[in-house]
Length: 270
Image (cartoon, rainbow, N blue to C red; front, side, top):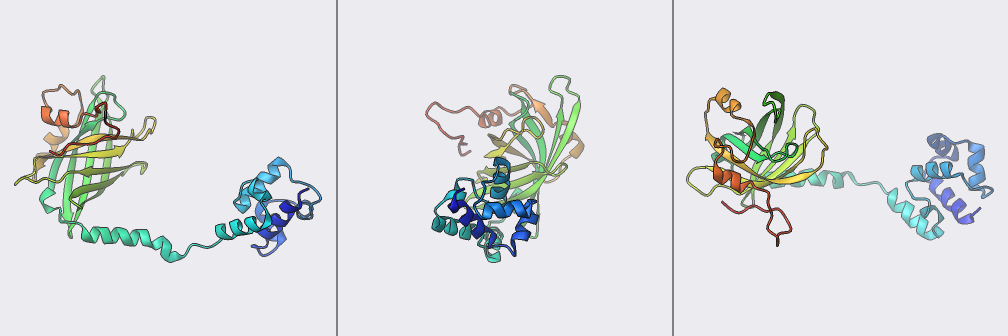
């Protein structure tokens, strides 16, 4: 049995209150474990895996030169300062504090993008931006019929935040029912006197089928501050690209085709 393994195992155990404590945590017989520490026998493949998983190293690392192993285990067992964990959220708050107002985007929208789960179909959903206490909140409802029977199949609901930073609109949203989907989107802001439609890129994937991650072009078509909700909901669903109910310029803008010399999915500024 390698003396290196025994020495490294002994060092790893020194980070705990006792050998008995280690054995209890791993669920291993103390008498058998002592044989590993004394170098009398080598653990079976199964027990070696249990020991390595508990210590947080690979089997190869258990046979490193003792000084290198000591440095490795010391780094991995060093506690992370609480302030380090708090920094990301503090920085997120700092970003939000620098965000520009999004009041002009308040209102209702149709949202358009090619469906991740229904090939060749465009989803038109109903979204709303609400501004409260200077922050933009986003809600989106997808009413999806079966693509063949056109009968109702399911409704997906999303909520999130919308803010403008560095001359781009950023959207983070999550699916509210099963809490199993998060989407991020980035839009060009509107530079006109009134909002018509916004173009951007979003990441996501099917909510139920396959869960394969993807990215697509997306558009938000402004409807107004007050609308007939029932009529708008009835106009949501799955559409073919040539459907006359869709604006041709929006259909063209959300096409996910890429030029031969393109390597990433981009969207042209409207």
